[in-house]
Image 1 (cartoon, rainbow, N blue to C red):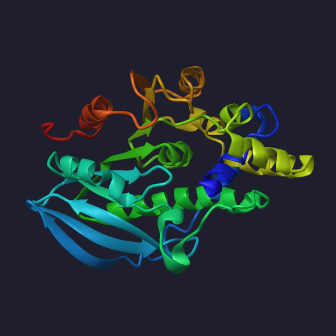
Image 2: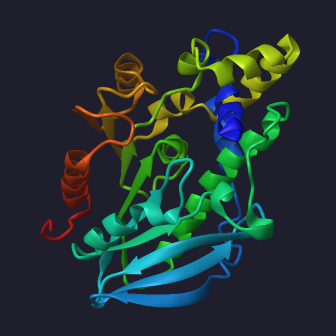
Length: 309
């Protein structure tokens, strides 16, 4: 919990945000460049059969070092299939969306569910800085996650059973944050579902009265605060969400969520590029079954999936 509180502090410290126009997007986007021709080096650990659907336990090479662990969920048949990439919240792992991926397999989609760098094991694990004094470590985790997701697109498109015109993305919380960064640079994905995504952590954290956050915030010197804020602003979703077109965005927000609040979520949606749509739910940050049903309908339409289960 202390680590999470330290992470949440990261950009809550100056009482305001860096305006999107103050950062050069043409420079920001270069942070997510990588060598698309490097070998994927995909390895399979095992396969589990779920009523004809194959769940492959896999890993592939990260351009930032180490191995990306994940599940590849493949429906029966020869395709062509749509493809969907998932990114979970924090804390969390690839297992969170597995049941949902099985549902999409029955609708004709191959799904890739990867672990974020902080959910991996051994030398491949990358965790946020618990001291909140090395913002470049935290920034680089966001960057690596986006690049690892882009490599996931490469992996899907390397398969002969995938229709390259029908790729989608689903991300929740941390996954929504990195999903918007991804959407600004990855146009091979047709549509993005952004679940409970906040435009920036600053607005919530600068006014937070949570004792742990207040304690850590007060422990940092002003130069440390400025350094952390300035560094993390470069991976702030509000600086990217206007650059998603022509890919489509579907935002899902909880009316009782505290981060983002209803007000900040509405501003986030307004700042996003078109095409976009939004739905609100009478729930909190975790969202609910209604939201799951709605994103399935949206992806069904976007990706030409089969009948909804």
